[in-house]
Length: 140
Image 1 (cartoon, helix red, strand yellow):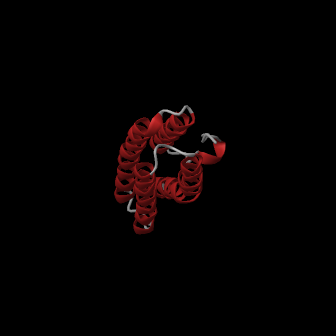
Image 2 (spheres, rainbow, N blue to C red; image 1 turned 90 degrees about the horizontal axis):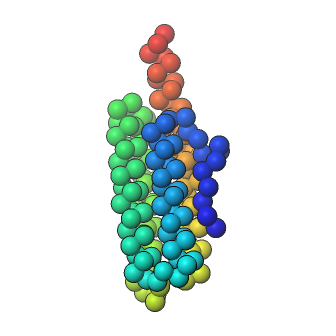
């Protein structure tokens, strides 16, 4: 299953939304690599690429939260740590196996794509809403 950025994932923050689109593109590149039987090395390379972009994106989100003094920042950081743990487990899975299996792709779907959808619709949207509320209250 490929991830898709649709209206339900729009947070209203242009920077975050564009980074989410890029993150989804990288997840899809990983899944595509696995489906085309790119092999273990290709899958590891794509997973590393995904991990690097995820770190970049999470750092940007956390910096934004610090700037706007978002009250839920610590819980948000815990959520980010959860995805880092999942990516580490996926690396281990690839190392233990001959290459990306159906089980690996299933784990990417369940533990990365589904996690991301839930995270964006909940945590990330609440950050964007908080930022907009602060901005509105500052105009009053």
